Image: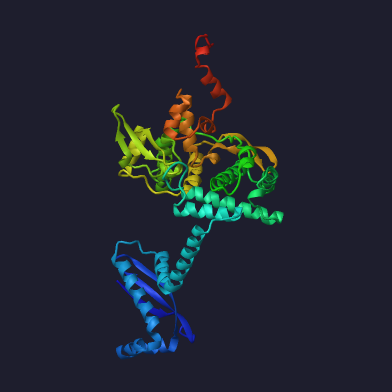
Length: 441
């Protein structure tokens, strides 16, 4: 195994030097730019003999060049000697870090200085406070309400999404919104702005909710009075008719033989675990055998600390979840959320789950009824809805379902119970009033 250097364009006067990383044992042959330029004629002459190479290296004008080149060679050889998976991306990344080390260090120093200044300087306007709020979330200075848990990357991303939309709103309306401008008039106009951009009602509701969260944080620092926000900024969610998998379909999916499609099989297995545990995708993807505990009732449970809320839940260990974990030596295969969303639709289609489902949808101010295939509505969140709905159909109380899913309120949980009218009626028939009657068979 070795690292060598060469010039591709020998006809040029000045050319970029390239590195070649080879290892027959590991079947590696990668060519990458060193990002360093050389005088072609001088370089080619230096390669004619050991003495010329030595003289070329000892030239004081080449000192910085060879310091970087030597470090590139040493670093790449160390990577080859290690168990690291050597890729083009990794090689290019390491070279960039070496060649631009001074610039990277300067940028890091500048960013740290800005961050320190941001921490020391209390924001005095709403836009500044939004930036400060997000920065404190990113650094861990600001924790989840009433706890010591850091705010999740997903939540921080949603805060940045609000910041972007709020900035766009101000640019469109040609005005700057400060604390005193957060009135009911602003609320109505901001919702109109988002509606005109054809965002869904739930996206608009999420933006309003984030705005309220940031305002409450500002109020705690006595930067504003959030009375208008508290009593006038209604967060209006619209119930979305999402589908769920029945117990029968979960079993059908579990038994579906995809051994000839390894990528699909991994996604199928992770999805089944999600349907049988009722967690968010960020949680059910990381379930592993180390989380299994036995409680005083003698049964096995999955003890899981939810990433978003920090809550600890105990999920009864379904035999199918145990079998899937055993299949992968105790740890689920790593799959990306988008791959799950893409392939679970294809798997559903292959299983024949193609019946048409009618959905009430809204984009901007336009409401309409959409017709889609059942399989095309499957996504990572379907799992969470499936467990909640199946537990409810089986007669579980809302509090019992919440103990598993970790929902903070019954109202929030109810949005996950996806029953059609016939299913609701069959559940109602089990209530004490109807059990006293003789229902016709």
